[in-house]
Image 1 (tube, one colour):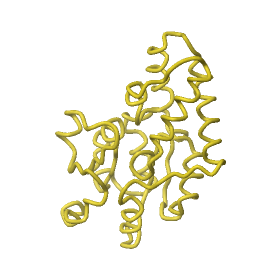
Image 2: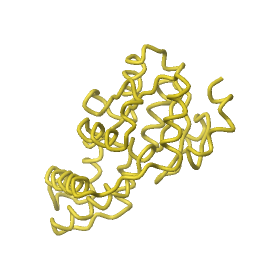
Image 3: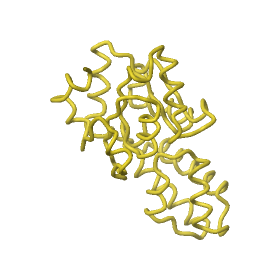
Length: 211
């Protein structure tokens, strides 16, 4: 969801900055970039190591969540990534079962998908609350495929993050990467089926993608 369907990443970064500032610290983009696509528990280790005990990561998360909810409930807009809504509708209208595998929490996933009017298109939604091992572990994708009642190698996956793409590749899926913040690393680039600048660019390859 985050970074592929919805442009929430810049909003989350702003919320981290505001939360850290209220705690007397600065939250740099490089730190946020290192945490993109990770679970909160894995990101917490990176954040804690960066600040070396200068702030409570638990408190930072609480304040960041509050900042995000204030943004949303205050009428702050969340935009689709380029071509994202059209891609969801394209696959849905052609009868493909759609699933979402997100490292985010269920409350925000449900709220944002409803807000943007696309939740009805997904027959399966798996979140961080459904797994024990977060991305880049393949568990979330294996569970999602099982819920779709298909084998992982029958799935076409779209991901923006290195952690997510690694999880999907390791699960055995055909993976297309549409990076937003981080470009694919060597592992992902060598194993991804396709890398796109935008979901707008997938249609000339559709026969190959679905073959």
